[in-house]
Figure 1 (spheres, rainbow, N blue to C red):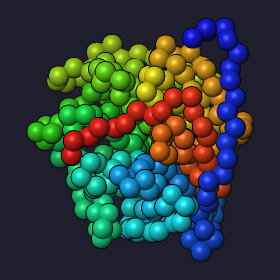
Figure 2 (figure 1 turned 60 degrees about the vertical axis):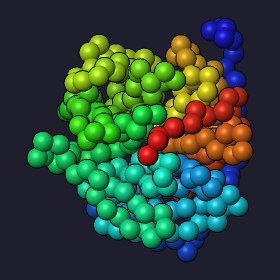
Figure 3 (figure 1 turned 135 degrees about the horizontal axis):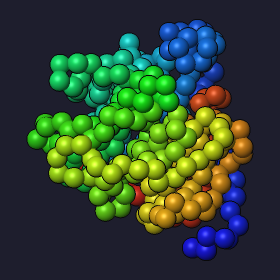
Length: 303
């Protein structure tokens, strides 16, 4: 890749939007804390695909889990007293959800039943878990963001091994958000929203990760939120209020997706060839799509 080549622009399309019947704009506790008391209809996050090709997403303020068919039909799978954010569907079909109120939850896709998986660490509750991903061996990585930021850089990143052992990988993040493993699963990339950066976390067998550093320094907007990995090792980054960027494996920008000003929070690769990027535009409650240069990397959780 020529680092001096011009940035390519990728246009987006509207796939579907939250139906009017599921919109009820109102104030709520989550919006009071995060949207300055606005009356909101939803705040979509956590897009991911099941084995049948259905797109799933969360609605943080109203505790809803949705499934969207390939034709764009919405079905409410669950609604409960929580703030579900990131979501990944394991190979056995269960949906693992980071919930800022309750910890990590599991959703039964057949019944919509919500059960706790992990409530805290060392007899203490989490600050507010945000996003998660699985390694090929079944280890679960997640961010504990809460209301941390530059004023309080105490956000954390954890790993839960298949044995049940929990490792605290780092506890000095000013707002850790989306996360993804590199192709070799030796490095964890974390979107650090308030630092407006993507950090690189080297992975070792046990304990705190040494030499955590900045991999991509961004500017403008509200900072990076969700991130995804493609099969070429490129990082796709949702930049709040800016749009979506693709960076190559060296950290060089190669593509800009969408329009400046779009409030994309997260995305997932889907479609028959996994080259279609599905994005949650949370201000409008819309799912956007774009055709990408490389297929998305499959999350190969054995669970």
